Amino acid sequence: MDVTRLNFAEALREFREAVAECDFAAMDMEMTGLYESKEQQPHRLDSADERYTKLKRSVETYGVMQVGISLFTWREDGDGGFYEARPFNFNVFPATTVGRTPVETHMGFKNTALEFLARNSFDFNKWVYSGIPFLRAEDANRIRAERAALLGGRQAMVVADDGATRAFVRGTERALRAFAASGERTLRCETANAYQRKIVHDMAARHDTLATRGVDGDVEVFRVTRKEMAKLAAKRLRLLDASIAEARGFCAVIDLLSAARKPVVGHNMPLDVLHAYAKFHRALPSTRVAFEQAVAGFLPVLIDTKYIIESTPAIKARYKTSSLEDIAPMLELEAARDPGRPLVRFHPRFAHTAAHKVMHEAGYDAYITGATFIRLLKLDGGIDLAARATSASEHGGELVLYRYINRLYMLFGDDMAWRVGGGSGRISSGDSRSALAASPAKDKEEAPTSAMENDADSTVLHG
Image 1 (tube, one colour):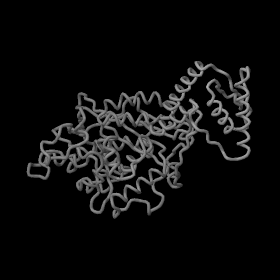
Image 2 (tube, rainbow, N blue to C red; image 1 turned 90 degrees about the vertical axis):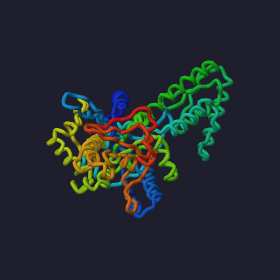
Image 3 (cartoon, rainbow, N blue to C red; image 1 turned 45 degrees about the horizontal axis):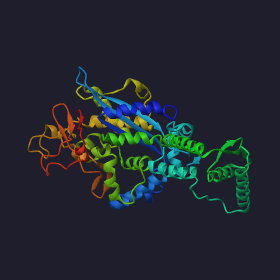
Image 4 (cartoon, one colour; image 1 turned 180 degrees about the vertical axis):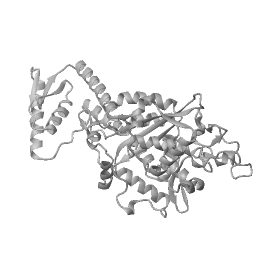
């Protein structure tokens, strides 16, 4: 489902219902760039703190253009069941206004990134003109406080320090005082530009019984009683709250995903996770340790398919690649030949994605990421190996998928895992399913505890 601001309300209703019942979500993003230079790219000899600093710099430099979230729900049928996929392709663009208040966002663009997107049929006009706005809660709260103070006449005015502006302010103040003392009902203040109109609105707001409205490029000041002023202020606050809710836009999707506390799957996830946090949740913490702790309350269970492939020798040897674009079609072809593997089907309302499979569209990439994860669960000699191993094997008869939980792919010397969140979860395997356990491990040495183990519901992943 391709989502813009035009159909966002409808899509949000569907997403709210779907995320509540899904078993897991897969996420992907399209960005305006990755790194400013080779020196700014993470290097395997970097320390963990140096890696985080480079990732943070990238996220604070570049923007997000699309967010793909595909929700996967297990459905039982006469043939044993299948995963039903609902991929959402959200086109997102930073909010530009809240009421009359402009909101400015600065982002960098990498020419090669834009050329890459253009080659893959990215619609830049749709992104700018129809992108779903977004505004973090902390920014929305700051703007609301500033606007509420202005509506109440409590905010100190800041005007440009030039002769023309000072003269305009003095003339406007004289006109407002004379009008307040007169018996006239309205005062027309002629203005040359938006900045002068803002000055008039702000200055009139400092008078208890004067209100304003825009008229044909000027500002009309009119007299009201204190009771009428209170009603008008309340109405303007309601309108302000409505405009803030509209500006928050796509952040509502990420809020729902975070509150659902479902596993979130991605491929080569570090930048995706940091962008999701920084763009739609709150500003990134200054230190790596603080972020690792914060992400546990944001997206508590993360699974990186690139880490699964790279850290599982049997899978890497079999396919000789961890590129999603390369391995996904191979897994899909194998799954089509093997009726014993779980099927992945599109929800009927998401048939457009099935008919228009476009790589590097965030929604479709999120879908193939989730489908790849499902197919990796049952690979011969892969991560399913432990489920059929003898008790003398390294993992016994248990599929220890906890090794992959909250470990994002990133080379650190000889290690390739960036451990984030509240620890690792555990997946137990039976003959036909794997359960992401919500109960604690039997003892402290058996498996690390997970942020997910504190949740009331367990999530079942079917293999």
